Amino acid sequence: MASPTDDAFTLMAHCLCKVNIFKTTISRSNLPLPAHVCHCHSCRHTTGALYSSFTSWSEPRASVDVSQLKALGFSPNVNLLFCPACLSPMFWVWPQDPTHPLGVYTKLLGNINEDLIRFVDHEFVGDTGDGRASVWLRHPNTDDELTGYSASKEDAVSIRCKCKGVEFVLRRNQSYPTQTKEELQWNIDLKMQKYLVVFCGCNSCRLQCGIDVLNWMYAEMKYISFINNARAFPNHMEELNKLIDAKEPIFGTLTYYTSSPGVHRYFSSNCSACIFHANGERPTVVDIAVGVLEASDGARAEGMLSWTYGANLINMEDGNGGWREGLFCQQIYEEIKEEVR
Image (tube, rainbow, N blue to C red; front, side, top):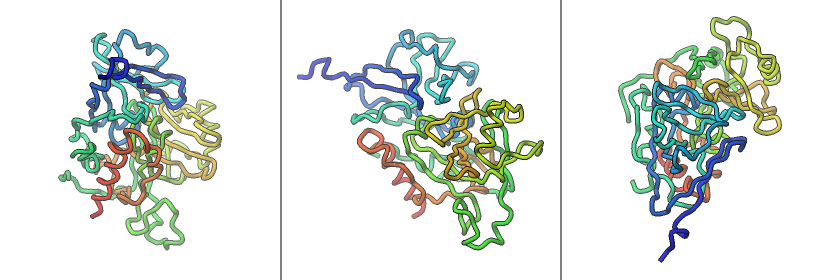
């Protein structure tokens, strides 16, 4: 018979830069932990992802020191807590109820070899307009189409965080129809003449944005502009960084964190929303977090983006060897493949 000590294990949660690390003790008899998937408009614009997922942090609220985290008034009753250094979203807190357990993003949890998480519901799918990620999260657990929208082919969509401290415009390259396959950039779907979207399961993106699998699209910086074309947007990563460092007001709350040499991750410093990712190997191109796009045809912005389901899954191996491998990454992979059958 197992002792209470044998039944318990330590669960750790940390941000991307690991400045903020939290630990709690979990009883195996309480597994799997129930988790919730939220598709609301606000979650999308505070993470850059198409959804967020969270569960309750088992440590009593009064014993968790969150004083080093920055708070965003997410709604009248709920605050979002995030790391002020790397901007990773970490916890939900209910300030009017000091006894309410913290909500923790599942992406923060260690990929331990336990039956750790079970997703029990989808919330606010109606906010998406097109079903968003719910079309490949229909069966996220191992034991187990939305319609009503039409894609519109917009020439431009907004890039916007929740607090609207970051607000740019992404434009379509109008020369696609006249270009050959050889002339088109690698980030363009030749048949659809749209920006390609990828699914990334790497640990850095997971910790950066608050979600286990993140969607990116790639765009040359020359197709990004400021609202009302107030001035030209920088065409090179280093120029962008210099202007942000100089605190140019036109960039609003945009800031960046250098996660490794030559790799920069851009956020809203006020609401923690992930906006861009850039690296020195392609300094004139940025990855744009799909969740901060504001398209009229829905969260997947299918008038502007090409979702080649099953073809662009990268870094899923980072989920191997723990609860993410079977419960999340593999199930999402199967759901995505099913979309193209």
